[in-house]
Image (cartoon, rainbow, N blue to C red; front, side):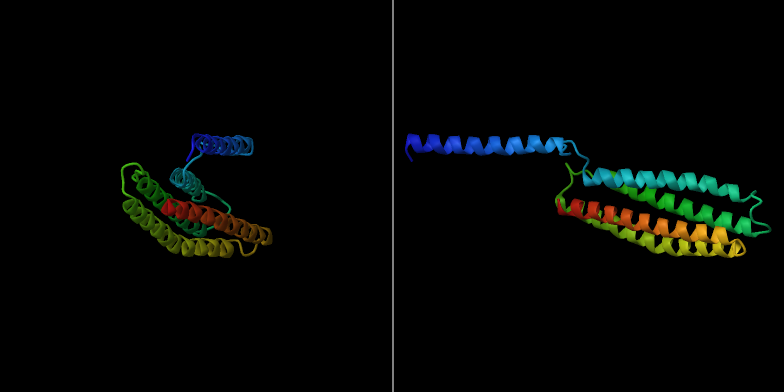
Length: 184
């Protein structure tokens, strides 16, 4: 290779790099962020958010004990099931959050990270296997408690549909982050 050929190859490489840098700079206006959150950070943040929501809903569920909306023991049964459900969901989310926080991408081997990610992904599915039937029972208790109030039944049905849609959307986000994390 002559000096001229080496110089031309160098200039061609430099122009390619400048072109790539200009594309990256153009993309920065379109949402490219070099400091974006990793999938692990997204999972931890999402579990923390759901754990906080679970604790908040647990506290709100205590309000059913003294509410005069339901008469007799129906209010107490509904309150106990709601407290149990939301507390269990919060504890499961906290366990998953703490487990994922223990993953250190810089010091752990790839195989260890993949092993832990698979473990917590599997636990996430086990949590769903436990929580979904309890949620169905909870909705059934609410429907039976408000069977004479048509508007409450309609509200419960719409709430269940919206909750189901949000749940599917969040599940897909969780699984996308788990997939990306196990690929890296």
